[in-house]
Length: 448
Image (tube, rainbow, N blue to C red; front, side, top):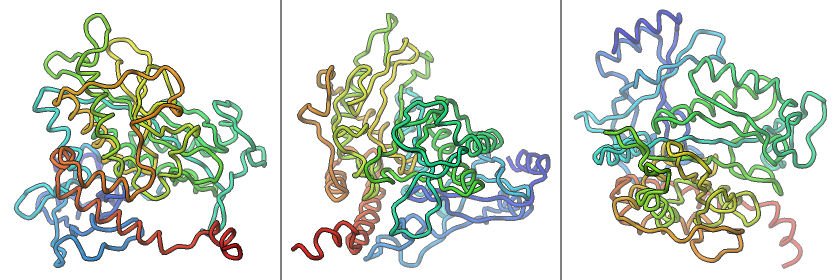
């Protein structure tokens, strides 16, 4: 492994290596090492970080009382050399690599998001199943905004004008931002991120990128890198790229839809369809697991207070876990496909998620349905916004309560991880509660 890494770094004339660990919020934390120091660390296991990076809130603070070891012991970082990539937006030759985390006695750090996903994938592997996923990421380009009290606005495109109205699937609307997207595609190609199609979504300067289907861990790694690349491409042109779930009042939110199927590792066949292309019982059980457990797993799909602003009726986002064929009003959509492509699309997750946790959560729900042999409700053929039942939590505290009480998800995801996530997210919510919004000053200041 060390020899392969050394050869790759020499070939690409790399000077520095960014060693990254995604925290609970999906922020990349870690260290930047000179090339020779990085190579030496592969032999000596000397690359370390304090374990409390996983206890930080999105603001960089810590819960009180502190849920971990107050002595902040170091964990050892094991770079996954398969994730070694160029960082194409720097002038100096730089590489990035994603690291797994272990304790001093070599045990995986169970609360690390990458390990949470690995834990779920191991459960599938024990039954000779291999999940295949394909994420779709929506995001906005917005004008630079240095005052957080000021609402976000669309940026000027090539025409020199701000986009007005809804331009869903508009070709010319996408071309307004060719200068940004050309750089983004170049960054992704250089960094080995397998992006596929690009479309314009319904919001002003709202875009969507689809990824090639593949291994869940590899795709989560690519999403982490893609978000960094998108922000950098936008900054080159003096605009922001935002992955907030609901960044602009009155406009559509941004999702990370996750298409998922499961392959039998012995036969290589999709277990969601039989030889005649019909849905299998395992497929319906997987959907039923999503229906049954998705509401309890919501902190993994809607992790921030802003996330729940997106989940509104008639907003292009689901409000329940109904399922249906070719129905975009449901939370769980089954696209038309052949046998090999039979899959279900989880449309609940916002783009503000940690990709490792969102993918782990959706696969965990489906896995529980398969092993418990659950049965789904009837597929929705009409407008699911008008349907009753299977509702999702409408705010973060409710979601955290449901997750804390769900024993099957605790067993699949790890109880220590669940407790930590709840502690961190409760702290974030309490911090949010200290902020007085413009709406309160506008409508309550002189009226109540």
